[in-house]
Image 1 (cartoon, one colour):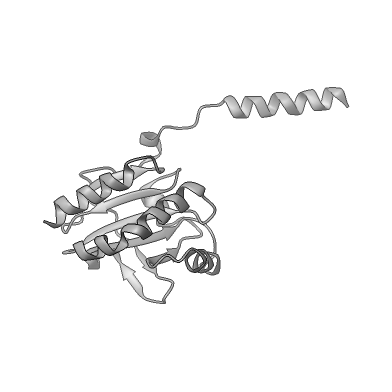
Image 2 (cartoon, one colour):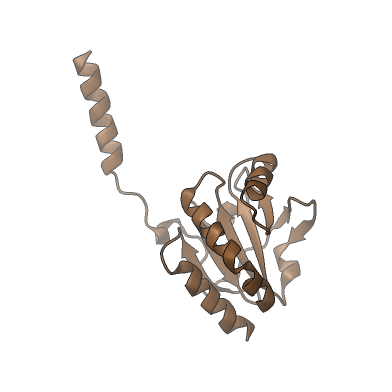
Length: 169
């Protein structure tokens, strides 16, 4: 019994000490790249293709409905959504996991007024990255990524808002 406990402890410590891949190593799209096109069905039933939004500034936010950092981002975003809408930026939130029902419940329970979709098989997410959420991609009117953030750190929302103002003015 003591040997089994020691073995489990060693395996866990080895896993904890392994380094995770860098943000760069898990990113497939960066600033200056054309945003990969995709078609998604929003929670309201609207089918949307990213390339159909050319001419608009779009913020694509990949998230998980179980991620505390994603919730922090959306809580902060909720406070600034009126300003974002006034700039003419379309925010598109795509859950890289969870069913449509789970995502709908999450959006509704938290009072987020945002276009959202479920991507439970990660088909869309995998065009952009292999790991980490939230990921935000600010895409200009030509479909080029102007700003990209990974996870949610202090100042990320201000960076995105500043870049939105710059692109939209």
